[in-house]
Image (cartoon, rainbow over all chains, first blue to last red):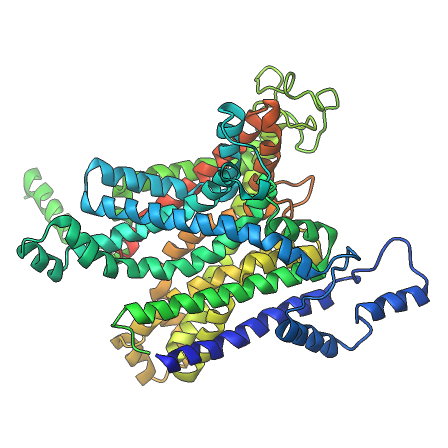
Length: 307
Length: 308
């Protein structure tokens, strides 16, 4: 087990390095630097600016400094567009918001998705099953950027129940729509995966044995069937996590929640390379870490996995 | 003299019976596919959408970038969908004909899906087949590379690319092409592992056919079924990716448009009561995705009966 974790860590580090290198190479390949403007700066001023941001150094030195600053000091450097703000400030401001609604979306997607999937599997080929399958197919073609306007249309414009945007310190009625918009399609996928794996488990021998012993159905489901049926769901959580962080871009833009996605898009429009790179690398690191945790959990739960 | 007519007919029938052909796997698959009603209906819808995207411009009464200044900002009252004015789907807030724009958006979205799937088929299949066929260390290195690339949040890298190299359809195609082949490579590799142990591959090896030729002539044709299935199932994902990027305003740039950009513009207008500007593009977006899902599902049932 220990050596497995070490081995996975050994793969995770080069992955992160590759991500950083890709981002860096893209930035150098960009036509024009971040300070190219219509009005040419005097050479002396330009040289000062370049020095301030370390852009006069050779490329390999810049990259080395960038990486060591991140690793040693968790410092992503200054923003290229806003003098008074560093990338760290941006992350500190936006990330808690993203984490809050991301966490709730995750909880909602898993709880609702798993319950729906289990219910559909137990009541196989009844109206409940068909309803669950229908919902999961329908939700697949409703990605978050389609959900967001529909929710806004129904709950804010027509019914007037929920505020149309903002964060307000994470008050519950401001969190509801972002969470629904973000979690729906993953809820659907989780429901579909749970249903099919649950059906498989319910047809297996040890469940028949448990039935033959005369255990109540609820106990069979909870104690015997749920754990093995959850394995495929667990392996889906990695991609779901990535998708949710990505989806936060839409949620932030649409509901003005002020999460990290909003900064990402704003920086994208302002060509604020350092902020974009910082967020990309942070998200990449989190993704790799999360996948690592999922894999370890998987190896821990599934006795068939040899590591 | 001459045999009786009935006898002749009987003989002809018998000869006809003797000609009964064995059904090929592809024919079998076609029969299975056409038995699936949802898939066939979706195929019809898809063809209709394709015709709409390619020839819809001919019915449109206006150019997609023609701005009717008298309607600008007044689309809530004057820009409603109507056959009388020739704006079948109404106009957008700048007074442009929504029908022509929806046609163009649908075309771009379909194109993105097809290009993405095309790259996935060509690159992914070859990559997976080579990794699977050679095996050993080559396989290890190639598939670890795929693993590493897969764990990178590509949406963010794609946005980074679009920001740095400027927004263009070409850049979008390159970016989406870069992501799309990874899954396909894994699937093709897995399938190749079973194919390479079959007798016909052994026979080819024994007769001295070069490895690349075996891959192209013997392995890849046998991968085709599964590759087609997953290519179809990939297309909705590609369309969603492109629409996502256009939705946040980083995809295709004006005067070009895509369904994502149209949905975004429509969503921004709905608070003024201009609901059609959201609903028309949304309708085309949703039925396109639905149709691809069902066709993909039908193809999977037809070509890959083991996997349910």
